[in-house]
Image (cartoon, rainbow, N blue to C red; front, side):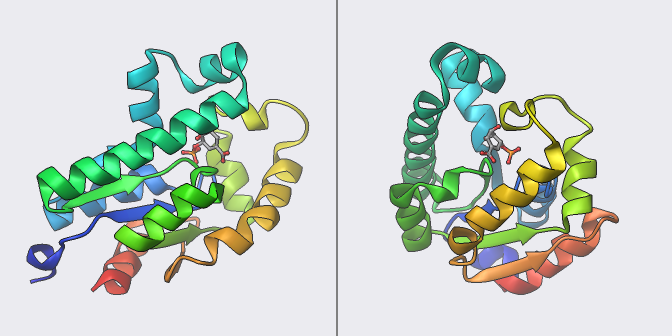
Length: 178
Ligand code: S3P
């Protein structure tokens, strides 16, 4: 069975609002693996929310923390969990060359992508994304998605997440990793 064969982290990359955390959580429970959301881990270790980190220390500081937290999660999960973990990353994490190289080398990387309309709709549900606070969210999401596409597309598994329930996306990810 697939669940028993998982022996390296499954890392979900892709834009804000694509559903990395929801899909990741359910995927992990289906595969009987641990789940961690890298953004939540950053908040826990900083004892601050992501908007607070951006406001207080700026984006470069956040990016550095993000890189370190993901490196730690990767090595700890390989060492202690035999790689049996699903990691949801923040949308910008995979654009860091070091993080990207580490993930591509050690994990099964899945790029989740959605139509812009879906990203706009899903990111509008929460006001917790500093990069969407200024200007028009649709424009920012469109621009970032284009800028990041060359990075995301290096993931060996691409899954298009529709606007509907995540179950279809999860099934596609399961097919991709099996
Ligand atoms: C960001 C995405 C966010 C969070 C931060 C920056 C980005 O994570 O890391 O607000 O640069 O795309 P989600 O992708 O989970 O929203």
